[in-house]
Length: 275
Image (cartoon, rainbow, N blue to C red):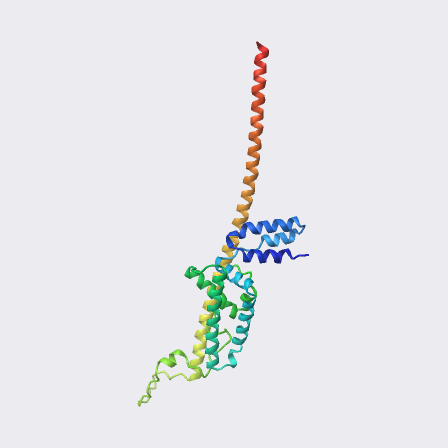
């Protein structure tokens, strides 16, 4: 027996989003006619993807190697704590090259040679998020909206390597030691460990702020998607009611015409009988 739900998802998330709503209804009706009302309900509940999500879905379905390439790089990046600065920079460059390459490929597959800048950015962000976030990676092929990675650096669990100086350390030369002894009232210069701890604290604060912003955006997007689906269902119901009302109106007009014809004939017959 074919998997109607899987087949429907494959068709819907690969087809153009403009055709999604009508095609979803057709596939749900087909499942219902096949005696699978539960599957029909699941198909009807599939959510319409945004244009950028569709571009990524179509790429993954057109080229199954995409997911394995993203997963392979993600596995390398998860080894961050054991890598030196040179290796991390190499992987960062590889990540950028892979995401750029797949973005171009996705737009070509979707026949979008000159997409809007916002759409290109969302495709790039989604592919980048798929490397860092296993949940995004698991949903490739059935995404309903673009994804954005809220973390910093290579991976949320990857600390800055000890042998890789920070950008500020590379750009700013060390200040010469002062010949004067600091006054007791002046704050002591933090030790490297204290400075690293402060940097980590600030990084965690930024990460938490970004995660809160992402959660709020996800909630807003989810609410908007649910509202869209509810309105689509309402439109389908009203369209069905309108079609039924039009059919009943046409039948009422036919009956009215036949009744009027009978009335005229009866009136004519009555006139002849009275003569």
